[in-house]
Length: 421
Image (cartoon, rainbow, N blue to C red; front, side):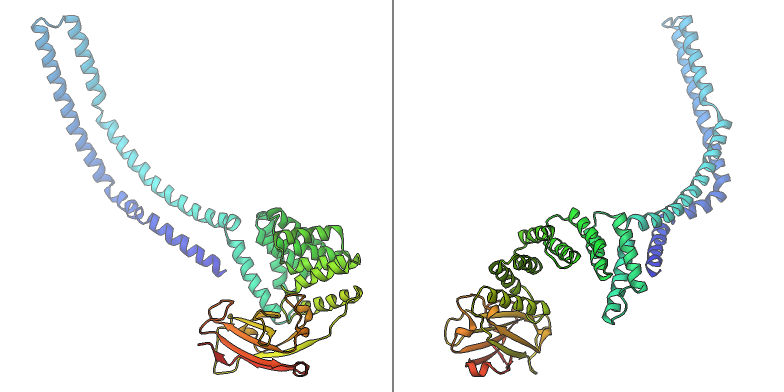
């Protein structure tokens, strides 16, 4: 309601400026009608006198030419008749007065017609904006905020707000079938409603608009996997492959292709897919834990020796040091006094601190350099204040090492406690 009130106020203000100059003219038109007619009459009299004077001058010239013999009598009569006819056409005082008065009246009525048209334009503009403008976008944005607030408080996904959002998105996709935002949002809402078939339809409509979008292909592949009772299908794999073609780091597509490879007993490919997915998955998420478990299972089935080595590291930023919440925190292990290249690494935000991260060999950046194969390790956590991957002056850092195998068997604590000069 407040949105429409603001729109209406601005439209009325715009029309007020447009019509400002016409209202005084309408009011003055009534008072000045008699004056205008009088002035018109005076102008007509002056014009008539001028026309008559010109006629007599022309007649005198014709008389002179006839008397001198340069103009025949028949030509004289013809030219004189023509001059008289023009004089009769020019001298029409009463008709002109009536015409002037009628024109004034027409102008008066025309002003009111313009005002009426402006008001009709106001109503039509509101109607057209509702159908073609951003009104539905604003409504969806507001409903989305309300829906997210409800989700934050663990309210029912099928609440009144959620139903209104769902209905608005259906209307939006009908009115704007080329709007990618509407289709993707509708698909995700359908997933929240556990309507997998409707979500599939929405994702396919979205791909008509953006056929090379990696995320849409990956999300559709996940829905198709769920529709098939968590069984890999050819269509699911096709969409996952299209997602990887557009974005080789798409973790969702990599995970699904790993599942498909595992189902056909290609454990080497499954381990490779899952290892790639793990490097692009938040380290503390349940997805990362599932990927690690899958990698270990695939290696066991391959007959490979699985090292159960792991290290638990709690990272914190104690006061008085402070950093922006969205600043990047690089956490990694490297060989003590060896190659500076990290063995394992994860990236989080300052807002995630404090957190506990669990490192193991499945997180190794290179299969030839496993953390468990090193005699001693060093743990490093650095807040990149300058957003650079390489350490630079002003960054905040904490280090812990050298760490022996016995020490890494117990949970460790790493504080980011110094600023790099």
